[in-house]
Image (cartoon, rainbow, N blue to C red):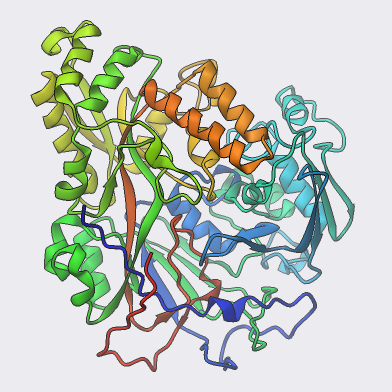
Length: 592
């Protein structure tokens, strides 16, 4: 299979990894002159083909909202955008004690919330351990605007489950979550119910981003657009469906090794151009500095075959890598005909994933013929998982065993896909429904919904068969296999479930998943996750289609904008080298 795997990013991330723990002169960003090779100023413009849903950390479950929120908020630790390792955030150091069951974090004394009317006089105050405790208690609070308890502190932090249950009864326990304490203004102490060496990954995710309690008291649900964090940028303006503009936070705590206060950019602007052709035109004209993922139908027009793109990039650089991302079709496992595992298996064998990846998507994906966890995840041997290869004869036999020989008696069903993302979704859907008709004799209709409506229907059990995807929240197999953990499934179908939307429940899978989550030995832990992955494939819990390949077009003068397999973006280190020769193509021999 042809797949573009080159990286032409030029990064000076290493220059920005020296942080100040004390006060430093503040500057509003105007007329700044940077020391060293970096430069201040400029507006970095990028596009999202779907609107954001919410910018409130506890409710962010989509990638668009995550991209914006990651610039405004931060946690006590954060991901390094270059290699996804954990780096300091609001905490500048920590200790891991008692076989990774006890974590102690020491906080900076110069982290300040963004200026906002929620504060007296409109001036942001210092962020202390009490703020961390407040936000972490809210993760364990029942609320329709809190979707992150299951994937953060549930079953992990001492007292988290008890506190959650108490808020469900409208009688919250005094003192909040017992396993989270703030012994002083600069220390947070967290105790876990069992060893979890990877707990820092959880703390770096969006559910653990820190916001001001005054903002929550003033805005409540309106924190969807009223953002008060401590991140490198703050919200300047939001015009929904049009643009979100962020501006430099002059009080941000970080400085680089040359003594420059970060970030370097004046503004970051997110546009919402839905049509990929229009997005490419905007990029070519200079109205965008980056395009994420090329539209398949325009790939040849832009630069020829993707595999030869590096020879055609005269005005921009190309960044590409295999992504920690799975595109799959979900079955509503609780409802017929998909409550029959034989039907789910038949659907899986009826699809030629190799053709989808190589022909439909022109090599810009990897066929998902293994398990739920993408092959690029470090240390995890996905390729030994027995998944689903193309076998139409076997598919027909399984469907007949399920009681639908040749598709007779099988109900007409609808495949629901979301808009946005160019032509990838409809082109893939058209191919899949044609294969189901040709190989199984089943008629499937396709309907396309706006992204927010699409998520609403699948999360509340209204969709029967749908397209969706999962991008790693952190580089670990747990973040993928959690989408099939049975204890996420609510009692009633109509109750919202944003993680295990297929409502898959398997005692075998759950026991393996739970054992892996508690296993301190890394080799045994990966083996348990591997066995859980295989169980899910045996049950055809969902229908993997392809593992994503991330690719970007980036203008040549952009620096410090690293690509990573999670497409995690941190604009703290990004800057424009406007002295760069516009006529030459930058090439970096480092490739993944």
